[in-house]
Length: 303
Image: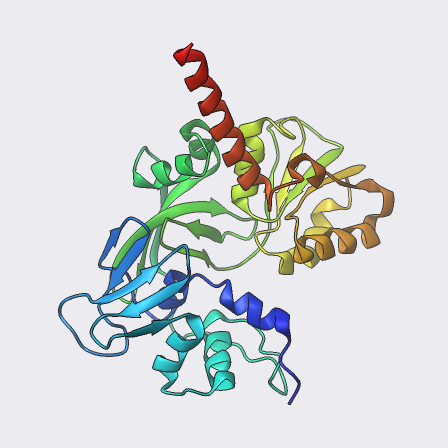
């Protein structure tokens, strides 16, 4: 058995509890501010008494009077207080490799597709576009690049923002859920009837939508990785470009991805992350920019 890496633990702690519970087949009954309320997922109850704090990634079961983080929640499902058993349960559920195992553990693919009756329709003004607006993305940009995806999971119907990839799959996002309708792949956006020598590269589609909102890279092509694990799949699409502008996250994963691309393309790769120097990513920069503009407008009106 290998030693469990600190990065593995940190990655697990960053997993959305709503996403984690959704993968286990549990959806919130209601939302109140930053809190999601569920019927306790590991016991039977009629009145929802299980609360998830989205921002803090913490849960609390009022029925049992206990709570904690994703590890203690995994312990309730796995019925184990052993940290390694909890970590293994998270890895299997989140479909991520588990470094402490002899070989990586993945959740087996279900015999039936997890997503049923997937239907892509135009994205109209709705709570979905309100959520994007809170992230700084205006309706005009969202409706041009995204769709509304209606889908079923275990007989229940849901809807989310859909962002198509080159393989026919979709990245899906809502206020409560972040996931992918397979197959997982990169997304390539090319302005119609134009051949570009420049391609902008983004980690996720929120960053791409943020760039479109800010007017960045509008004349060139754009590639969204949809996961840094897709760098290998991106190569065949990027080979033909003279310049590759990278707008990657300002964290260790983003830096490693940039170095991978530089190793492949050398001087053709340009790091553009200095634009959002004090932010984690381009969307955080956009939200700060929107906030500053609103404050300036209020000051002008108040004069």
